[in-house]
Length: 349
Image (cartoon, rainbow, N blue to C red; front, side, top):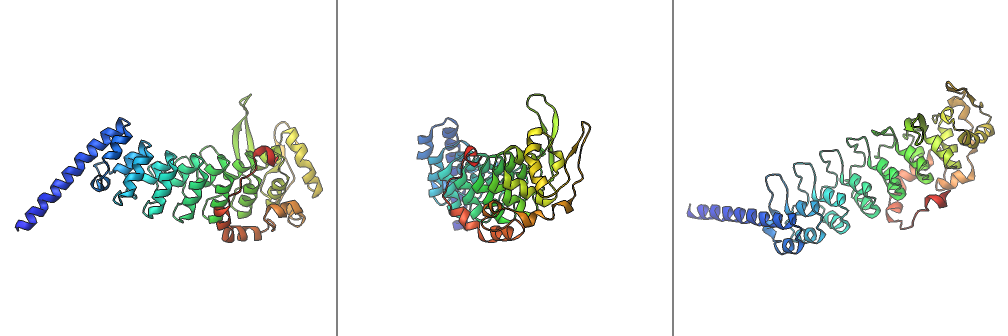
């Protein structure tokens, strides 16, 4: 009985000591005194969880103190997978603060909860894509636990964020998981395919189309920057604007790309030869409404007439199915290990 009472006293003393350490640590963090915070790091401090479910490691990540965070991780007692009241982990906060070394160290622990979804519906992967950190995004995808299918409160997926940020390699790796929700429409009425065409990412656009789930016919209500006039903008419209020949053919081949909505004179001039080449009905446009006689059947011959350029863009296969299978099942490691840099937008044109 005496032994049990003694153990209880020891436990209370340790808890009180850790709480006091955490209070001193928090003060040092708030005052941006990283050296002082670093000197306070102990296994007891690292393992302490306060009433808001925060740890010292979470605090260090919130206030962007990478050296302190790494010291806490090194204790082996930092609870790297701890989830606070806002649904965040040290990993998601480190991703939000773009703390590259800390993120990689957390992933290496194997306990960082990479798929955790915070109260705003974001995952660590989404926050990493927001910050455009390619190497971290690829590392998170490689864990197999990053929840690539997650949709946040604004309707974004990691894939749509990667496309909006022009992160080709990450987008391709996400598509390769087969779980990236390629047709998702976000709060701003855009899809990953619209972003890929808007920002001139032909390889990503082709991979999205090849999934068969990219929602190629979706149109948003974009605004003209000068006249503030709403207009219907589609992936095909942006592909025409950027002169993406291969993507234009692939979009037409889906039979769902709504070519009748491409009404800008310059864009129509670029598009018309593709329609004429495959003996399709020409546009009939009036001021009231764009009209067309095109139907899905009109596109039947396009699959058999894809150019060699299209085949090369599809890694040696056509868009008609084999590309999807080869990409989704066999190309993941190639994209995760590939160190090559993608061409700039100007070079792609």
